[in-house]
Length: 298
View (cartoon, rainbow, N blue to C red):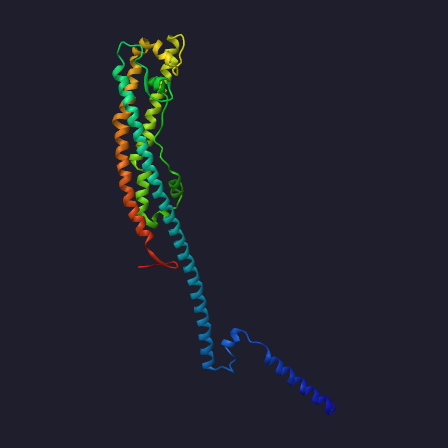
């Protein structure tokens, strides 16, 4: 072999060896160098770097999830507070509604009482009454109280904001259990349920009994029946007077409004006004709580 060729082979081998040493090392190689190159200090430093990187990554990921969780809790709290404020505003509307309902009941009861007192009088106009109306002839508007028997107005205060509130989850209600309990009691408590359901049930029963009486008894006995006509009540006065079932039914409806609905309305209205003040103070306390970003400042 010529001298030049031999030198070429030596250079080529050196080149390959250098290239092999320049190949990038994996993290395992970096952490565990070859036996010939092993150095405890290098091994220790590399181990510390990997552990520190892993711990740093864990802390960043954990903190990110924590911030996200706290942020969701804060958003739910703000949503709860806003709805509670709307509920409070709606309760003022309910109080006004109840005041008006009581006023209407107070106007209705004297009409019922007057009709009961006049029932057995010997007068063709005992089933006709009137109220002042400047647009009516002689300033009086005449009507038949019994002709209004099928009219009813169930106690049904506003519940729009409560419908939104009641769709929340258990965790949502527990954001402030004191506020939630007060709201549920006002909207779903036994007192309001009695007014909204029980009285409506009795009203419906009495009205259906009246309609049934007219359709099954009066239509059979009288030549024509028109309860909306004042003349009908004048013309058939004696027949209606002798209908003891109708008198009994009318008195039962009067008793329902006089001794149950009226008293329950007054009691319910007192509770509403009292709870508005209490709820307002609790909501205000929650509203005054200070936060730094998502964290409450005690």
